[in-house]
Image 1 (cartoon, rainbow, N blue to C red):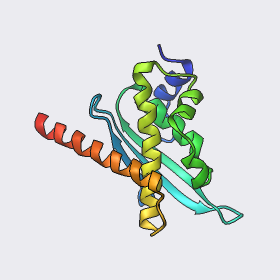
Image 2 (tube, rainbow, N blue to C red):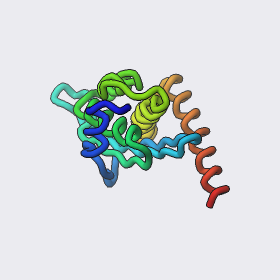
Image 3 (tube, rainbow, N blue to C red):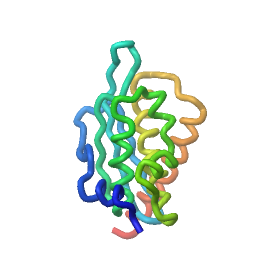
Length: 156
């Protein structure tokens, strides 16, 4: 059973859409359920010179939990520094939604991964140092996306 907050974000998703010329784009997919998420970020410096996520949007093709976790993630990271945004994990996403059914926890992992992948993309474009942890997440995401792509090719 979904919480009221999950249903609210599903019915009225926040920050849905695409950012043209995004500074970072995170694309993730799940082989088992077929969900696809794309998260876009625009980065700018705040008054203290720290890089913050100034704008964030998403496009998600999936179930109510996938759309809700994408929506709440955009709310959680907007205005945050990149460092603080990187600390938002799937547990924080689930907690912000008031919980998810156990079978839908993977959606919160996808949302967290989409965020990390968007930050990875931004760092790569800017020629910035990418930590080993973020590089491992990126490599796992790329393997998963390749499997999803292969599955869609077989079906189509």
